[in-house]
Length: 324
Image 1: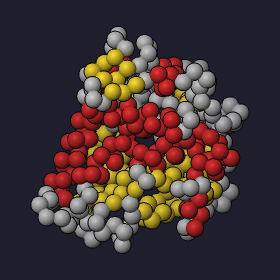
Image 2 (image 1 turned 30 degrees about the vertical axis):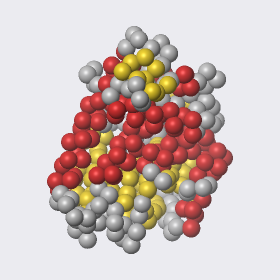
Image 3 (image 1 turned 45 degrees about the vertical axis):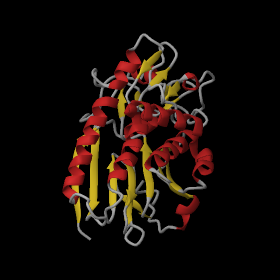
Image 4 (image 1 turned 180 degrees about the vertical axis):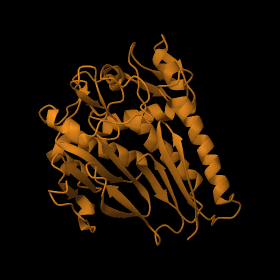
């Protein structure tokens, strides 16, 4: 099955589009559809990045007024962030921008070499599950789609983060619905589908965060699959301690829960991204509960791999403890 395959930088990461031949009449060739999607993703990045002074998100975060008129894409992104917070009981909290900056994540890390996990683990704090904040600022954010406004308390800033990547993958997937099959890879958040995908699923390979080896292959024909891990954005602070981008909302500090990475299945890329982050922040015991329904894979601090839910029935190649 032929497919157009293109990769490009976007949102500080690497995106990839795989688009098969058009099946429904009137659709553009795969390469034209992929180029249209790439242009839209670039526009999405320009509007929703917290690192671009001209973005709609920065305008919202810096506005002195509590209620701000906003364009539809930002409204959709904020709605997605609020859904993720509600869905996870506040563990996936997009209002931690100040804490992220205090931890050292003030500018895009695109192109920066992350601190290796093996260097960070020995000096990491004691492991414990993350907890939601007692005062949840996200509950005070309100979207009025009819009035095209977003209302939030003074000083509350929103970070788009991984939620926007999952959302963007799902929105692009709508453009490709009439093609033989497609995969939208938004830096590890994948939306997959297509007319022929049920009989020709993609084999999505999961990479071990410590060794880089492929340790599991998951057949996916529709919906989403996403990976959240510590190793993608990890840096050393001025005091020598290592920080990463997944924060414990209760403390505002990087979360060290006993898990290095989680891959989760979902009905969409947004749901899969939210489940993966929720599971990782919940720690080993909590991850089992989070992933039981849709399925997922976790990697523990010692490198061991554990499968949960429907993914347990899939073939898995595990690493020995020595290799991890």
